[in-house]
Length: 210
Image (cartoon, rainbow, N blue to C red; front, side, top):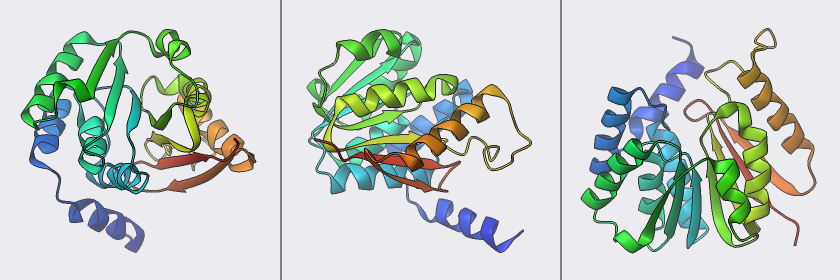
């Protein structure tokens, strides 16, 4: 094992995951749903806490792992989470209840994100997390940057997409989409961009323009 891999493994195993998030993670594995790693969860919780987030949109509910982590960091926030899978959202609702998140702090919308997002108020959210339909990641990030307030942050887990993005020989549609997103955002003057290698990559974009 290389030192770099050992360090990544150490960082992942260092995290103590909240019990309900750990239960949700196990459910994700059983259902075959990709979710954020424990270290990625800790990172997005930190972003939520540091920004004193009050309003969060999540594109891709899964069974609630990411949402639980963000509400762990910002327990007073209101989470709006969008997913096309009603059954998964019902499972997520159970985990939010188990974590004693007040029902009025979580709004689950069943539907296609590209249909729902245009109806949301622009510049009204502190965080938008994008974790759905990876081939549409650029479209969802563009929506997210319209929805966050100046100083708000768009979070994109899986930004290194299963360690394929760094390998120029990998040219499938999803890998190419993430690679294009990273290039575009790294060159943008409208956002402050940071890519960290937790999990399989976490892209953080903070909106700079007023």
